[in-house]
Length: 301
Ligand SMILES: Nc1nc2c(c(=O)[nH]1)N[C@H]1C(S)=C(S)[C@@H](COP(=O)(O)O)O[C@H]1N2
Ligand SMILES: [Mo]
Image (cartoon, rainbow, N blue to C red; front, side, top):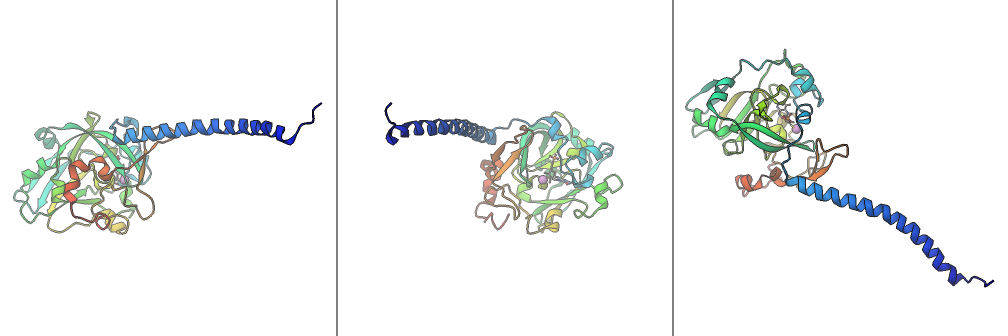
């Protein structure tokens, strides 16, 4: 028998190693492919406005008046009384308006508006809201020339809202917009979702949606809209001014001091919870970037 030379063994070694390598490569090829598909899906769904299922929209909520767990709002708000409900528009206006939610529903025609809600915590949902431009209601009050900002004040009712017994935030919940942001047609007063009346956990009977800002700007269960001269301090700014600024525009380039804002988890996208890149102004830049021209958005976060 021919003595096997080292040089002749080598190819066999290589073959075995190669098989091993291919096996590994096989694995990593398919995982690379999965990765690529994830990425493709991710970029596709960044732009897609495929609505999140109702069961997620109505059970995974932030509404600290009912508690800080995601399940608290649906569990604890079912008996919350939203009728009768009045909302007052006052401050720097020519005509103070005091109007019921019922009258609002009769006076302003709600339409479906499918917007992505991006929470500052790093998740998002696409929600088929029902509502109309807030500007329509504000015009009724005729803001005067001192009206530079708009403050939104949610209801204070610690008997019905167990979370308000604790100083988690300054109660009532307060938020604010600059007047041009409040008058922008995308800024929506919400009356419903999925073609139905707004569930209590989503802020019934009336809540705001500002699609290019983090979710917390969109106050729920609003009872008072004040036109004011000076920039109002929101409940979040008061609790942590370093973390929450007045503008709070969705911006993947400006991280929260404790976490990145570059990407977001898509709620309801399965157990693997797809992550997609976060878009500047939550994808609404074509409509709103001009509101901030010349502003340093790292400073005015
Ligand atoms: N009054 C009030 N409004 C609120 C909140 C709240 O705790 N209280 N949470 C905000 C936050 S952090 C988010 S992300 C959205 C969530 O809206 P959704 O539950 O309808 O998805 O509501 C916002 N509006
Ligand atoms: Mo949020």
